[in-house]
Image (tube, rainbow, N blue to C red; front, side, top):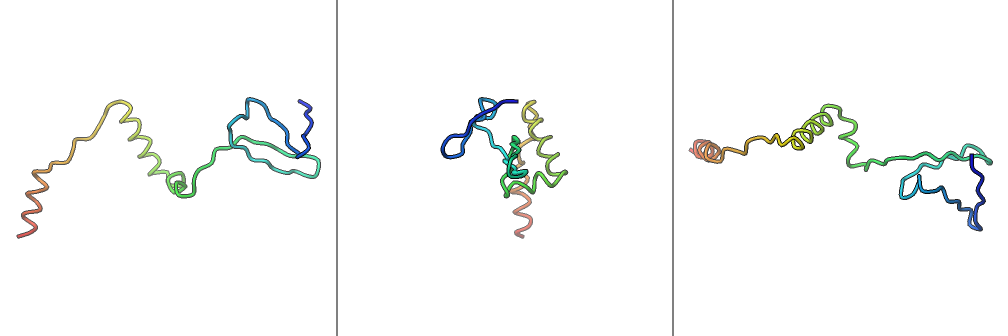
Length: 88
Protein backbone atom coordinates (compact mmCIF):
# COMPACT_ATOMS: atom_id res chain seq x y z
CA UNK A 1 0.00 0.00 0.00
CA UNK A 2 1.21 3.50 -0.86
CA UNK A 3 0.02 6.87 0.35
CA UNK A 4 0.01 9.76 -2.11
CA UNK A 5 -1.35 13.30 -2.00
CA UNK A 6 -3.42 14.74 -4.82
CA UNK A 7 -2.47 18.06 -6.37
CA UNK A 8 -4.67 21.17 -6.46
CA UNK A 9 -6.65 19.71 -9.39
CA UNK A 10 -7.30 16.33 -7.76
CA UNK A 11 -4.63 14.48 -9.75
CA UNK A 12 -2.33 11.78 -8.48
CA UNK A 13 0.53 10.02 -10.27
CA UNK A 14 0.41 6.24 -10.44
CA UNK A 15 4.04 5.53 -11.22
CA UNK A 16 5.94 3.83 -14.02
CA UNK A 17 3.81 0.68 -13.99
CA UNK A 18 0.87 2.68 -15.32
CA UNK A 19 2.81 5.02 -17.62
CA UNK A 20 1.29 5.32 -21.12
CA UNK A 21 -1.33 2.67 -20.32
CA UNK A 22 -5.11 2.78 -20.59
CA UNK A 23 -6.87 2.44 -17.26
CA UNK A 24 -10.42 2.08 -16.04
CA UNK A 25 -11.24 4.23 -13.02
CA UNK A 26 -14.18 2.85 -11.10
CA UNK A 27 -15.70 4.93 -8.31
CA UNK A 28 -16.67 2.48 -5.57
CA UNK A 29 -18.04 5.09 -3.18
CA UNK A 30 -17.16 8.60 -2.01
CA UNK A 31 -13.93 7.43 -0.37
CA UNK A 32 -12.74 4.68 -2.69
CA UNK A 33 -11.78 4.26 -6.35
CA UNK A 34 -10.47 1.21 -8.19
CA UNK A 35 -7.94 1.58 -11.00
CA UNK A 36 -7.52 -1.34 -13.41
CA UNK A 37 -5.28 -1.70 -16.45
CA UNK A 38 -7.32 -2.09 -19.61
CA UNK A 39 -6.98 -2.81 -23.30
CA UNK A 40 -9.56 -1.21 -25.56
CA UNK A 41 -10.95 -2.76 -28.74
CA UNK A 42 -12.31 -0.29 -31.31
CA UNK A 43 -16.03 -0.80 -31.98
CA UNK A 44 -15.44 -1.51 -35.66
CA UNK A 45 -13.14 -4.42 -34.69
CA UNK A 46 -15.40 -6.01 -32.06
CA UNK A 47 -16.96 -8.36 -34.62
CA UNK A 48 -13.64 -10.21 -34.84
CA UNK A 49 -13.42 -10.49 -31.05
CA UNK A 50 -17.01 -11.75 -30.91
CA UNK A 51 -16.69 -14.21 -33.83
CA UNK A 52 -14.64 -17.18 -32.59
CA UNK A 53 -14.35 -18.84 -36.02
CA UNK A 54 -13.09 -15.67 -37.68
CA UNK A 55 -10.70 -14.93 -34.83
CA UNK A 56 -9.29 -18.46 -35.01
CA UNK A 57 -8.83 -18.18 -38.78
CA UNK A 58 -7.00 -14.86 -38.45
CA UNK A 59 -4.70 -16.22 -35.72
CA UNK A 60 -3.97 -19.32 -37.82
CA UNK A 61 -3.19 -17.14 -40.86
CA UNK A 62 -0.88 -14.91 -38.84
CA UNK A 63 0.94 -17.96 -37.45
CA UNK A 64 1.32 -19.38 -40.98
CA UNK A 65 2.72 -16.06 -42.21
CA UNK A 66 5.20 -15.94 -39.31
CA UNK A 67 6.34 -19.44 -40.29
CA UNK A 68 6.69 -18.49 -43.97
CA UNK A 69 3.71 -20.60 -45.07
CA UNK A 70 1.92 -18.69 -47.83
CA UNK A 71 -0.78 -19.80 -50.24
CA UNK A 72 -0.06 -20.02 -53.94
CA UNK A 73 -1.03 -16.97 -55.93
CA UNK A 74 -4.05 -16.95 -58.25
CA UNK A 75 -3.91 -18.83 -61.55
CA UNK A 76 -4.48 -15.85 -63.83
CA UNK A 77 -4.38 -17.92 -67.01
CA UNK A 78 -7.13 -20.25 -65.73
CA UNK A 79 -9.15 -17.24 -64.57
CA UNK A 80 -8.85 -15.61 -68.00
CA UNK A 81 -9.90 -18.85 -69.67
CA UNK A 82 -12.97 -19.12 -67.43
CA UNK A 83 -13.85 -15.48 -68.11
CA UNK A 84 -13.69 -16.16 -71.87
CA UNK A 85 -15.94 -19.22 -71.55
CA UNK A 86 -18.47 -17.29 -69.49
CA UNK A 87 -18.50 -14.47 -72.04
CA UNK A 88 -19.55 -16.87 -74.81
